[in-house]
Image (cartoon, rainbow, N blue to C red):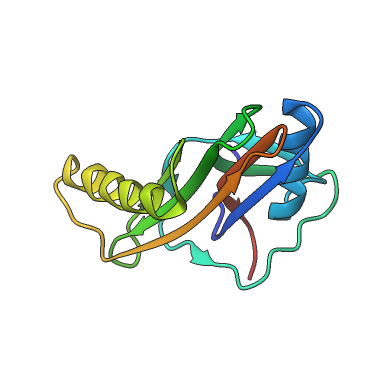
Length: 155
């Protein structure tokens, strides 16, 4: 079994590139997670996980992350991404949600808050707190938005 992460960080990025993949890579660079190997996970925040004030990942590390991304090659298009963490009482697990849309940052932020509330409601609860980060971008040639919740380890 892998160790359970005890820290998390919400990150966002936006960028342009010549291709969808290079736009995505540049958005990862903007978010501070470009020089690691992302391991996509689903939606559970480990019990007791605490936010990181500063994210410093060793290059090449295998990094668990729940994320969403959206790439568009339609100039003038507004794209947005958001990530949210809903936390329950200390010692209980929380929820992570990601959302992307052809919309503004404020629109995806409102949607993702509702998604976190619903994820708790189907489990018979309510979040004690919701933390959200969002980003938007107007495409020039090939743009990407990215939002993720890095799960990590620390004292």
